[in-house]
Amino acid sequence: MIEAAGLTKRYGRTLAVNDLSFSVEPGQVTGFLGPNGAGKSTTMRMILGLDNPTSGQVRIGGRHYRELKHPLRTVGALLDAKWVHPNRSARSHLLWMAKSNKIPVRRVDEVLDIVGLTAVAGKRAGGFSLGMSQRLGIAAALLGDPQVLLFDEPVNGLDPEGILWIRKFMHRLADEGRTVFVSSHLLSEMALTASNLVVIGKGKLISQSSTKDFVSRAAENTVKVRSPQLGELRAALIGASATVADSDGGLLVSGMDSDKIGELAAAAGLVLHELSPQQGSLEQAFMQITGDSVEYHTELEAQARQVLAPSAN
Amino acid sequence: MTLLAVERIKLFTTRSPWWCALITLVLTIGFAALIVGNANEAEGVPATVASTQFGYSFGMAVIMVLAALSVTTEYRFGTIRTTFQAVPNRTAALLAKTGVVAALALVIGELSAFGSLGVGMLLKPNADLALNSSADWINVAGVGVIYALAAVIAVAVGTLIRHSAGAIALLMIYALAVESLIRLIPSIGEDIYKWLPFNVADKFITGNGASNMGRSAGEGAPMSTAVLGQGWALAYFAGFALVLLVLAISTAKKRDA
Image 1 (tube, chains in turn purple, brown):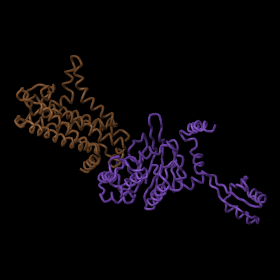
Image 2: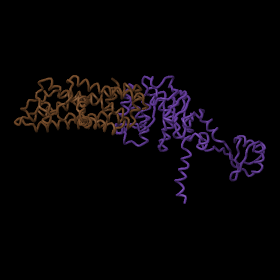
Image 3: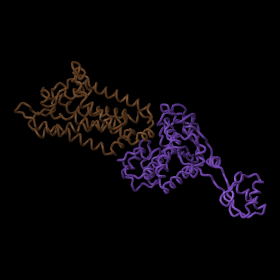
Image 4: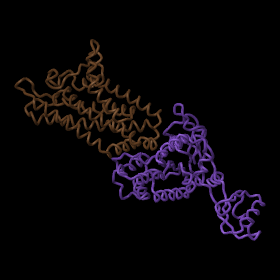
């Protein structure tokens, strides 16, 4: 497990990570969610002892990263798939890493096989596509068969097949009882991958909860109903103190779940043509919650408008 | 030992060390062939042990490129982070790298020095190129030692600067130009020059000219103006390399990787 306590990182006058405390439990995938520039990568580098925290600390299984004897056997990490010498072969890259932590050489071939790179193991890593580099990075993370795994934006730039592969892979790792901590700026991706979420914005903790809780808290849940007896249904719903709004050819009900609405309609003998729970867009919800903690967001919008303006004419 | 093996794998699984090694050998041995080939006993300019080692400083420049690249490419491609992730003890990791690179420099240095001597013997079988004094021995075998220390300096500078172009430019400009330009400073230039590290290193190699039959510059390897004896010259150069290395490692330890 990973525990951060009061983790703070300051670069000059910018506070990249601000008094961040959270914990990541084993046996599940924990998402590390935040807009770009929220301090996710910095936090991950501090977990790995690469960057020194300005204050606070982070421990893995109760110990600082630098105290770990053969760290690759405890913590595997993929921070950047391009951190490979372009002229070194995939196998050589894994070979020196294995050697450094006294991991047997056959494990190199094992992990290459797991990620499906056996056929190109002898090729120079500089010629790899992003997907292949990502797989090599994952192979490196798995090398020491670690209990704790860190992935920084692992699906960035991958095709749908690659995304699916990584998602399944993480679930498998978590099912094996490992601690899996994966960062992303996409809530929709995290909703499918992670069962727990640590959400940050501008370096500060916004929430730590289960993904389900976060999503339901974030998205206002509404139910769409269509009925030939719309007027009566509307009256019945309002009578049961639900909020009702018109929506093309039907009603949008909030404050009441679909089970309840169905029962209500049945009790009143009303015919329903549609009864469908609507989930608010996750991205919208995410924006809502991280709202003012998005660092560049207003400038971006203004820029986007500027760029779009001429093409509109 | 493990860390040395790690750095050995890293060094030899990329191409640049092989190229640099090859270029060093071609340069130094090529220069030896030129100088010895032009030597003429009848005109009083015989080939000497020192003249076979004329090109060692050019080889040293290439060695420093090799050594600097061994660490700057790690910063360039982010593998330094993977390294520190695998070996959080940065002092140990960097010492291992320095050790492996210095050992390679030593081997290349000895190959190039004895290769140069061998070419000399081939071209001028009648010249007195036998190693029959300690001055002769140091002039040849010492080249590898100086290459190893130059490699340590380059690794240290590479660690401090982290950018290939910057580190290499600094090393080349300093070793090949700055030291000799300082001589041009009026009145004190020569005195400062006597204590500059690469000039002192040259003193270790060339000594007081015994290996060159007492000839002066222009007729073979120029002589160093440093005032230290050969042993002290080596110690001075080694000390300089060590100070830079300590500085580099302590900086790398404090810095965010």
